[in-house]
Length: 194
Image (cartoon, rainbow, N blue to C red):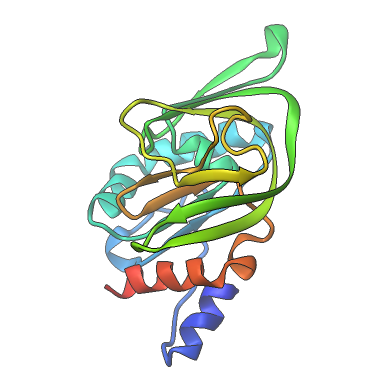
C-alpha cells in the first residue's frame, strides 16, 4: 500500500500484481518485487515454487531491478534454511540469490531494532520490529544491509542486519518496514523508475 500510494503521489499509475504459487514470474513485466514472510511449515512449499522461478528471479535481480525480501523470504533467497527440532529438523534449499545461510535457533530474536544503512550514498537510520528464530550468517563475499545500532540483527552477535546484492535487499525488519521508513519506499521506487 505504501509503494502504491507514494507512486500515485508522483503522478504515476502503478499496477499491483500478486503472484500466486503456480503462476510464472515475468521479469519483463515487473519493475519492483516485494516479498514477505511466513511460518516455517509454509516456507518448504514456497521454496519449491521459488526454485521453479529461479531463472526469472535471478534475471530480474541481475538486471538491477529492485527487490525487497522481508524475514521469511529473506531466508529463502539465501543458500538454505534449516529449522525444526531433533528428528523433525528440515533443511530447505534456497535460491542462493543472497550469499547467506540460515539456521533456526532459540530463543526468538524479538524487539524494536535500529540499523545504520547506506543504500543511496547517504547514511540513514532504518527502524523496524524484528521477530525471527533464524540466525542468518553472511558468507565472506556478502554485503550486509546495515550495522545494528539497537536490536538483534541477523544473528544476535555479528552486528549485521540484512543483506544487499545489487538492488536486492533482504531484512528481518518488519514494523511495518515501509510506513516507518518512507525514504526506503522512495528509494525502491527511484530504482524501479530508473
